[in-house]
Length: 84
Image (cartoon, rainbow, N blue to C red):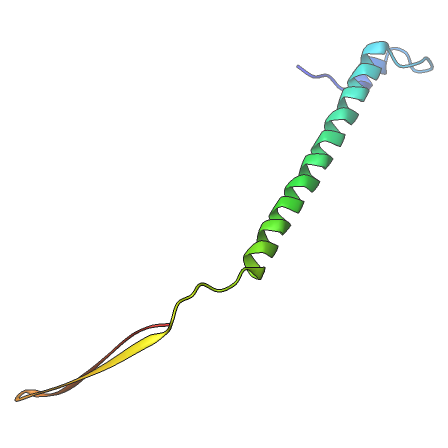
């Protein structure tokens, strides 16, 4: 279980930090650097995907529409169908 730096150095207020403390500090900096690099890489990947999606050409869909009129003894009707 991790311990705090204060508890490790409390017994030696005016001496250098113990080797274990320096090792833990170095590990923390290494993890922080790795986290920063991965966050930037993930942001670049997301931005690239959004850019490609926005810049891609529209699919070749031709809009079409149809209007159907119906006349019967019960009345008149109309139906509109289409794809846009």
